[in-house]
Image (cartoon, rainbow, N blue to C red):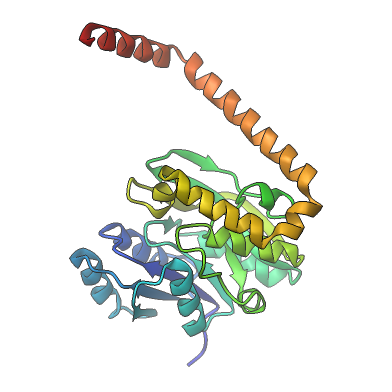
Length: 277
């Protein structure tokens, strides 16, 4: 059997009905030479298990099952079993534009020096807007994760990096992976179009990590400890980049609070609280 060009890999843990949209978005790709490898990472909820059972009967779809070990281990298992030369991670609650592969695969095919292709990302669910990703270079990646997990890369890069680090269970395994690739000099190319959609819900792993300060602290400290030499070498640039991020965030909040409707809502809330006191 001829190997597909692209392997889309999806770790799944109690994703619920949104998993249908992820699977459907792969099936709808205009670039048709793909396989979809899903790993059931110990799911217990009935909707997820039913969706995976249906998906397993579809052409070009493989469903693997394992005990719950976290998305990094599940993603590693999916890639190890995958056959494509290019790999696209897709989380179970995210989804693709139908043109994602058609826009990104030709970049890797035409540019042998390029190892990763990332696109702009539409924010859906509990957040809105567009994430204009990049640059995927050191030191920018040391300040924050600048590209989404749903970025196309050459399989040999995963092999050379020895996969995703399974110690990152709570979050951050993709950030660590991109740092390691960038530190090896891997070139990343941006496609400036919204071709992937990142969903955030109250139960999302990313949201849970952000809502629990101790969890975020653990992830960041693990990144800092693992890449201590890189942070030491690029400390001034990292601090400057973080300062710019905070400044831009402050400006964004300033614009929000300057909006007349927001001001009116804040005044109304203050009056309600005063009356209820």
